[in-house]
Length: 285
Ligand code: AMP
Image 1: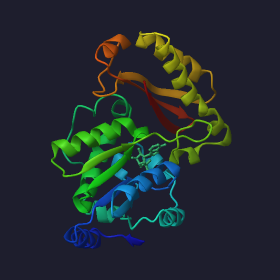
Image 2: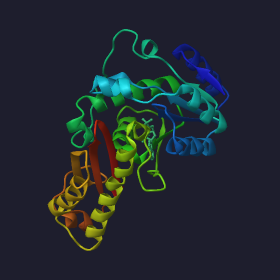
Image 3: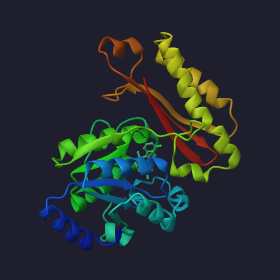
């Protein structure tokens, strides 16, 4: 496994790999790797000849400087985990390398970049599409792997690949949970022990909402209220949003039967603060 810190060196390697017809799998991350990241890596290993993992905490997608500063990092540990998974290259650039001339955002938006996390994290997805498109330009992967945990992000990137004619196959991998049901996240490391135990409430509230739907509750307001009550019962929580949307289009829905008519699916997505730590979770019904 090689660690590559400059764009120039990464591009030289990509040229050689492309020249010899290698299939390149690419897994972009912000590091502090956990089992869900390793799942994406495994999938890439299965489906490609070469797997490139990027580790970069991208400043332009953070709407809060304190959050950026506190985001967990541990490159040595990540390096060991990646090596164990037989990653071929870690692309590990610094800010000077990625944004040398003070560039901020590319001017690209799509219809998925509204509502949900876009409403409450101003500029977040503008930063995400900027860094991901820069990484795609550098790495030119055959396939790229994203997780359902960041469901809105996945739809945005899938659409961006289409809109900007990237010749990349997009793969969305399932949401991976801890044994108790908490969605795996690097941010879980920022929780106190008590907050971490309480975080189970997110999955519990989603399961309860799913049950309501399965018992023919169709009013999304009622379902949201139910989730809200469950979460508000837990100390130190502050709801950022709870939304039920069409899982394909992310359009808002009032009545579940609008979706049922077209055999569609609903994504129930939420973001909740535990103290200062914002966690997201979702379920598709
Ligand atoms: P991050 O390092 O948090 O930016 O995540 C990098 C990639 O891993 C993204 O595509 C995430 O959606 C994915 N990912 C993170 N946590 C999970 C999870 N619990 N289940 C599935 N994918 C995840």
